[in-house]
Image (cartoon, rainbow over all chains, first blue to last red; front, side):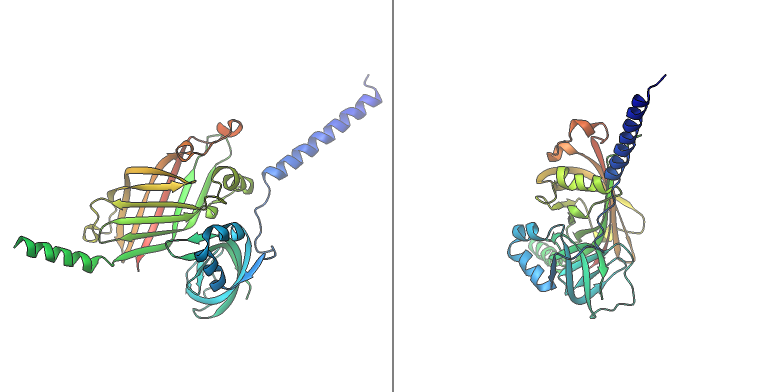
Length: 132
Length: 181
């Protein structure tokens, strides 16, 4: 015959077990960052961020890597999944870029800075979204 | 006579030396999965690559933070503990494709050997005679191939707890579609 007290102990243990499994599962399978809903840490122009990277790459990497950034500029190139602002900032989109936007139009883009590309001499953003 | 041929040869080199083909959206995938454990796999779709068609010199650059995993926690661990992408944000390759010439290429894939240096996590590894397949289609040069690398070659220490879940030989594959600049 199980006493009421030990029955209760078992129940507490079971709840703790279920809880730790749930928390553990949520930790392991947590969602990716959602850059689209994050507030931008820096609001810049292509010229400023490009100049900063050219001047001091190490310092700029510390400042901007992995940060959500908002950039306004003129489109100089549009491809299926990316566009380039002022020939200085390359923006990669997760989704297909709206092909109605034209070269030379001014846009505002939010994305995550992933670094400076020496071959292209361009700053790169990924997970971009078009703000306007 | 010999001199004239030599001079003509030099001129022809300098004329074609400007020919560069480039891509901004090359792909690199790597996988270090172990059967029956969760897949360890990432892909990068904005790799820059340039080839100089005059001499076969080839360079590629991938910003390490651009490698995307299905699992967000795995991506975080990859960046913070293994690739240390805050300190080493770039992965690069610089090399030369042996016997490359634009005239040789056609729509059919042909094998070439490439030699060069691969840098990742601040360590450089020599890649010798790695096979790549090259074809040309509507003036787009397509270079693809794969190789294996190990984490230890790049000074990446995998903790004992997860060692059984990550393959020691990492399979890396790439595909670049380069357009004339």
